[in-house]
Length: 200
Image (cartoon, rainbow, N blue to C red):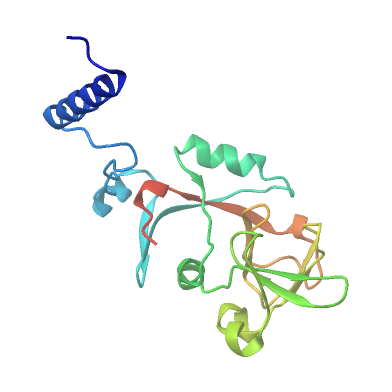
């Protein structure tokens, strides 16, 4: 007796389910997520170290190098390390940098109208700067540099030991030659991140 088209569909569906059960497969969309590696193994990668802050965990490597505004060298350096340029898109992640370097690593934009915007690790996440709410993220309680909206031309003052620029994901560190000296005279660097270790 010939099976109807609907009966054939049902038969195929049941067979597929049976095979999945036998092989231990899970339906599409229900695949189990790969657990993060043992945190202790982060240190197995030369120069990388595990950093924790509250519920956040990151496996990072800090690399110093002289660089211009382009982020290609930074991408190459991190790619060579088998990692990606780190993204600090939360207060907890920024605090990891702040704790390790005793600096604040943020970007601070000013629009044409003069409105100040505090920018976390991605440019898509912007909140209007509020001194009481955000002062703990700035060195000595206030931003100490200015940034034109579409450029990386930045004036860095002597009492600021570092800043993090989310557009290029680069950071400057230590002191510049003197107040007002442009970014090209600062010591630039990059933070590489082994994303498989990251816990948000």
